[in-house]
Amino acid sequence: MRYDLKSAREFAIRVCVAAGASKAMALSLAEATVAAECSGRSSVGFAHLPDYLEGLSCGRITGTEEPSIFFPAPTLIHVDAKGGIAQLGFDRAFEELHTRASAYGVTVFALKNSYTAGELGYYVRRLARKGLVAMAATNGSALMAAGQSSEAVYGTNPLAFAAPVDNRPPLVIDQASSATAFVNIRQAAERGEMIPEGWAIDGKGQNTIDSCEAIKGALLAFGGARGANIALMVEILAAGTTGANWSLDAPSFEEGSHSPGVGLFMVALNPELLAPGFSARMAAQIERLSSKGIHVPGNSYVEDEIDLPTSLVATLEEYCQY
Image 1 (spheres, one colour):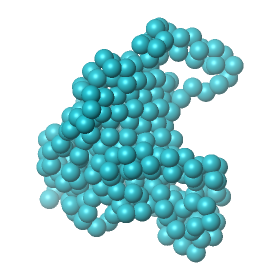
Image 2 (image 1 turned 120 degrees about the vertical axis):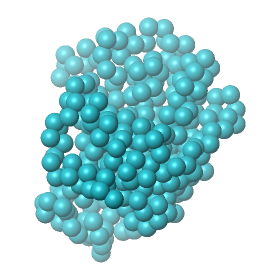
Image 3 (image 1 turned 180 degrees about the vertical axis):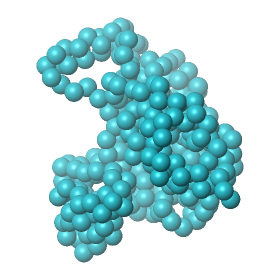
Image 4 (image 1 turned 90 degrees about the vertical axis):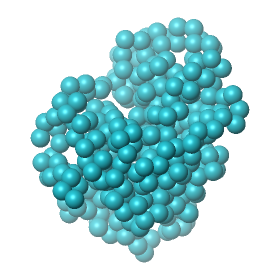
């Protein structure tokens, strides 16, 4: 089914409110969901929305909680999501984050006690559109094994980075520390499809291409030890410095009635204070790289309509029947 962006937002708001979200939470989640679709990250767009709706219905997300915001230092913003969603905490602090980073040159945003963050590129993209260079890291419930262990010890623990570019959408890099996102494994299992070798292990710790067996096991880091090291770095930033749950301690985002309580860490930098004309330099450099056949991520963004599978729309509509 095809939706213009306004209708898609209204649809997302409606189903979120029906599942128990406050209007403020529904607005934040709807905006992030539509943005993920527009950026080509549909796996963390409307396809991921049922996870939030189920979380609201079962208590993994506190739908009416308002996040608390603290300022431990002029360039530090600390948010407690109180079992809610990261998107609302980010929205509540966004203007302060933008203002302080623009004035002081750099500001750190740290959020704890939230559900999974959704599309991580969403956060840095919004800051880049305000002229800031931004980096983000987030953890989640343990889904990925590392080293010689067959036990899941980290979330997919992604990193995202964005930079403003003159007369173009921002450059956006958003990638997991795991070889693939968990939602890709789950979708493959639902379709009965095999997965590439190197994505996951089964419940016995053996490499598998069977997506159903992978669900019982754990994801693998990309690049072996190097990817695992990045996952650990993300864990320290997103859980260690924010006070959120370590992935090993985070309740499941799929079942139970407790919030994963994970974290989101961001750094926002005003590049103009260091390199005046930064955005124009970025545009020129991207042109040069593109001319050499280099793919520059984040250069396309849909701003008119999105398509949603009819089966997914029906699943979402079910939440409005209760």
